[in-house]
Image (tube, rainbow, N blue to C red; front, side, top):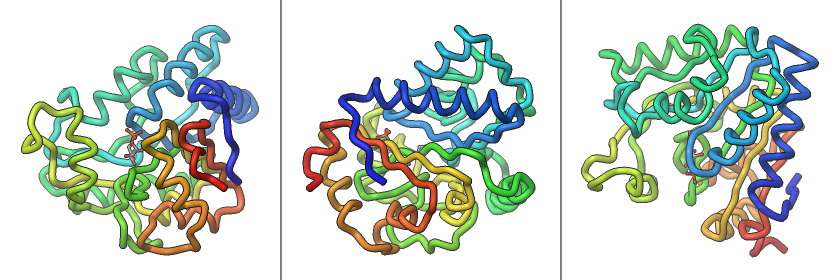
Length: 241
Ligand code: F6R
C-alpha cells in the first residue's frame, strides 16, 4: 500500500502517467482533486503532459475536496484560485466541468447538501488525489470526524490554521471554517492516491503506517479501501519501518 519514490517529481511522473492513461481509456473520467503544496509539482507535470500530448479533456469532470468559507473565488488564497492558477485555466477546463464547494454562498449548509448531491450523482469519482495534514486530516476532515460523514462545514483546528497560516499575511486572516467533502464520499472513489512529501510529513506517515482504523486519525479510514496507494518520497518515508 505504501510506495516510496526518490522525490516529489518521481511521484508526479507516476501520477501523471496514471491519470493520462485513465483519461485516454475513459474520456468521461471524474477526478477528485486536492490543493496544497504537495499537489503543486503534480499539477505542473500533469499540465505539461496534457499540453504535450494534446490530451482531450473535454468530457472530464473534476471535484475538489474543499474550500475556505469566506474566501471568494478571486481571493488568492481560495482553493478555486489555486486550481485556476495551477491547472484549470492553462488546460482550458470549462466552468461546467469543474466543481468546488462555494465558500461565499449565503447558506453554507445548503451548499454542502448541493455539493453532496452532485457527488452522489457521479456515484464515486474515478480517481481521488489526497494530501495529508500533519494531524492526519484528509480534505478538511479533522481528527474525530465520523467516517460516514458527507460534505459538511468544519471548524478548522488550531493546528491546521497554523500550518496553513504560511500562505496568509497574518494568522487572524486564516479562515476559521471550511466546507469539505466527507470521508464517506472520499472512500467512494474507485481509486485513491494519498501523497506525502518532505521531512515534515515523516511523523504523520509513521503514525498512519502503524495505526489501525481510528477516527482520531482521519487518513486511517483509507486503509479500508481496496484500491489505495500511499505515495511518499524518501523524506516522508524516513520514519517508516
Ligand atoms: C487541500 C486539502 C488538505 C491538504 C493537506 C496537506 O485541498 O484537502 O487536506 O491536502 O492539508 O497540505 P499540503 O500539501 O500543503 O501539505
